[in-house]
Length: 346
Image (tube, rainbow, N blue to C red):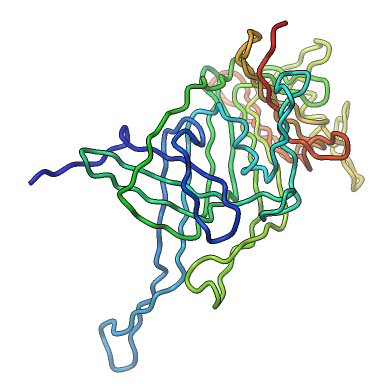
């Protein structure tokens, strides 16, 4: 009798877009979320265990709500998947180059209409010997996600999900893994308005869709179709504190001025309405050669909420800057938080 141990380097995760709540789809073999380091999930029966007066041991057991939560993490190269993280729709450019880039447009809510963001099915396979262990999670939504990097590292993503149901089978797909190279920290720039932030050590942009998850008698133990209540963008920057008179740039002193409330401020604003730090433009690129990709995160109405400044004997002073942006960048009446394209050399 043969025994096989499943392991990560013979596992896969692929996704497909659903067209109705509660109806799983079979993903195609090349539909990877991105490069994976980890796919992790918990499945909980929500069971209750009780006893009663006169009983020392548990005598009553009942099933509760099925709750499936998890996350995927890895190196970031696939900007198109951010449509499910920011709550958007893909508007493909005719050529997909810098003259007509692909855009992710903020959608109105969760759902299956043209202007809404749908759920996904995620197929997770473990392959060894002749015995595949395959699961399909349906009703996948992403309440939170983030991308970020530190100096000298690749850009990483982490997307948190919740699913409706799970079904196991032994039928695996033929897989083709991602071939695109991940973005790198060294090939990125961050601007507030037209000013490039100087001496960034690390950055992270987080996306949140405040889903209303609930259960009902019709759907039984399984999650009913959700909606979201609001969309939220937040950011964190690690910046070496400095003063620098370089034009079209922003140093640590100028970041603190925006924390106070406005450029050139020397103390906190006493009014109720702060000034914006400017629009956020995070550009990630892999070069300017033919077909080299570029992805831009562009957010409107950024505000600096907090600066943490540790001063000690460890060396340079490094700010931790956190804040919010109110929406994707407005373009012809639409909010476009993400653009991406492949560079075209004439």
